[in-house]
Amino acid sequence: MSTNQNVWLVSPQKISFETPLSLENGEVLPRFDLMVETYGELNAEKSNAVLICHALSGHHHVAGRHSAEDTHAGWWDNMVGPGKPIDTDRFFVVGLNNLGGCHGSTGPLSPNPRSGHNYGADFPMITVKDWVRSQALLADYFGINRWAAVVGGSLGGMQALQWAIDFPERVSHALVIASAPKLSTQNIAFNDVARQAILTDPDFYGGHYERFNKIPKRGLKIARMMGHITYLAEEGLGKKFGRELRNDRYQYGYDIEFEVESYLRYQGDKFAGSFDANTYLLMTKALDYFDPAAEYGHDLQKALSHTQAKFFVASFSSDWRFSPERSHELVKALIAARKPVQYIEIESNHGHDAFLMEDEPYIRAVRTYMNNIDKELRA
Image (cartoon, rainbow, N blue to C red):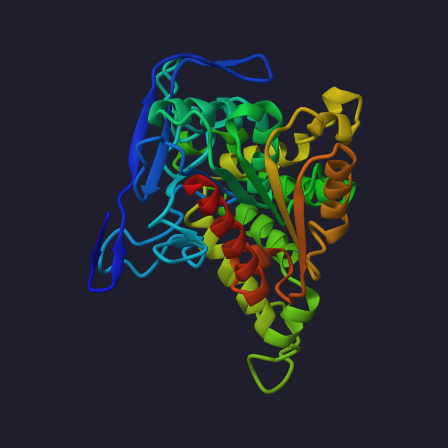
């Protein structure tokens, strides 16, 4: 990485793992790649490493830009970087694209060594536990025995929680933001509707659309449009668009009339042009399957009883997809298990997407918490 004309430049790297990875569903990946970006410097003790886990549509490009002409900074550039809450002048930060992703890590778009074709629909189902296991191998690659922090929002927060449960001795702090200990029934239902939009697209071809030079753009667009609505708060959406029309009067048809329709269709088209449909299916199923308390008799307190990490939990008032009540459930279980936890509930009109935004109390809380981690390391 380098600084050039006030642009923080970063470069991705692909790390290959040539050993088989056993998955929760009983299948085995014979080998796999993880696309990674790192920021900052790993100290001599290798104690200042922070892992950033991404949400459904995220990837390894967390912060900075790939060139001086790059118009798109990383997806959490307001949170990660020099002098930012997760300060890369003090921490060695690792971002990755999860297995099953479509941004360079092994996934449906990757060659299947067993068939000679790309995996497509043959790529196995992946769970949060599988991701954490692969991330542990990534930590080994860097020689990191214990993360100073594992951080994530939404599906990323689920990974941070799973890390603390599965590898208690390897996580000092877990930052679980806008997340939940498992999906609600409503969330599972939303995910299924989104998947059905993709699965029933005529260009899906059973998930092997690439072999037919097709992309199920229509289904992926609809899935994203519906999902995007759930990530936003009604208040924020109303303030942004209201009932504003593109024209002065109703057109009495089914083309775009309201500005909110234009916005959603733009977001859907943009997403369908950059994301893989099979990856979307895999990511939403990983969300559905996540329930770390299940193997502990559905007792969340018991699931957390062996964790060694300190926890930071944050929720947002207008987030109805991962409501504050779901964070309360986690916090109560942590307290019952006598685990150290700090909780903040932020007033915001950004909905679920608030974890990506710059609500000042939220940014300040993360900065303060990370400053305290840095003080621990220097003590």
